Length: 213
Image 1 (cartoon, rainbow, N blue to C red):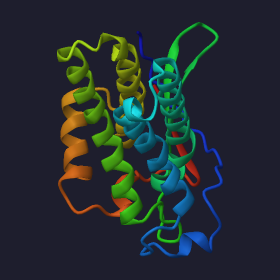
Image 2: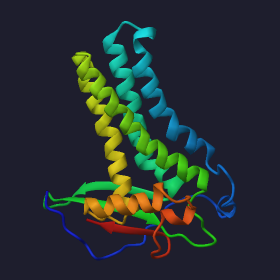
Image 3: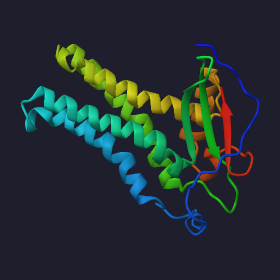
């Protein structure tokens, strides 16, 4: 897939909350509803997959339920909770020439407009990293136990979870495509040190900084 870099930046206004909401950077959880749904769908999908044989003998019912939860999780994390919890958003769009472009959006950090609290940042990134690992474990468990009927569902789980992780890591690193640089930068800024809300945004124009690749 050919990637094109567009140098132009464009200010886009997103509603991330009122000034009163943004005045408490030390608060543990400023967006409890977004935090709840960030965890709810992915945890529910995992628990339902593990326990579906206990609740129902219907393979079709379990398959549809887990897939629906995974889809809801993918949409909510991609379009809602990423914006609220860490001030990031990513999307992929096709232009008129049929070329695919990654678009990364990040709200500018200022002392008067903090993007997230430390607790929200940790919850967001840890769940984003851990859940794909869990589904990879499910994949090998399904493979080795020869429960091949679940293989398609587990593959869908890995794909949806990994897509959000990949998109947000690129968004966090400003669209850097070199995987070694992405990994090193992501670990040094996100996983290893003590997280700070300012670490999760790059300065840019007022409002929303947009990069297209």
